[in-house]
Image (cartoon, rainbow, N blue to C red):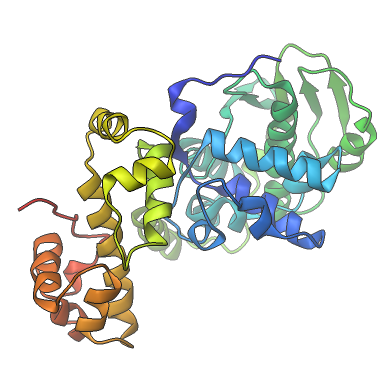
Length: 356
């Protein structure tokens, strides 16, 4: 079995939509989601952050771990079949502001990466058929079966939440051999399922595209769509190395560790770590400062600690150093954040400024 281990598989490019849905199933099966995440470079708390992203490799490692623990041969179908528009995050919620299913499909296709799609999705119209085709990003056949099941079952489940449970595709075509659990496909999709095809496709009647979505109101929908689009997090090109380092640093923020010690944690030399960070156009100080800033923002908004205590909790020896650093990062003093007098200092609207 050939696996794609190219460098982009180590970059945190994906919203963790599939991982969240998979861990929801883990919890329903009475297993520990925390245990499934252990050692993968992220926590359950981080998965609840709307801006958090993971790498393809991190997601695939978790999926394999869950496959072994759950022992469900139809795991992808089980995960996808329970999804709703909420499962797809802000892009999914924006589908509710669409007038017709056609508009909703076009919207989610445009924002598939923001919705966390781990496969490449394409949709087209051919005569009276609408065709949704999914293409894997790697050559890992076992993982791809899960991802294809999850993607196509998720698409059908979400459409059923929009237009009703009566929705059924015309046909499902899959480019892999008939599995032992093939009966589960027919039970869920309620249509012909053909294995050994030349591509992975979900084919439906175009009549469904003109289905008017319930609750649509032109003026309210436009206003809400505009707000949701502003909330949508565009995929970024962070490296998995940065994500691992950030997770490690968050657990030792009150006692920041030197680069050499951090390098030992990753079993590489300080020189190699410094070079790899330089290749990503990021410095160790940048990462430490960003984690400190995020933590300081959170503690200031909670209002339970003094500014001095927050400075100590984020690794500063005295409150004066903390105030200077916070002013450099945000352009305002910590007290101004606490007083709420400068709301434009929110990290979503003002970039972190590192350096002197």
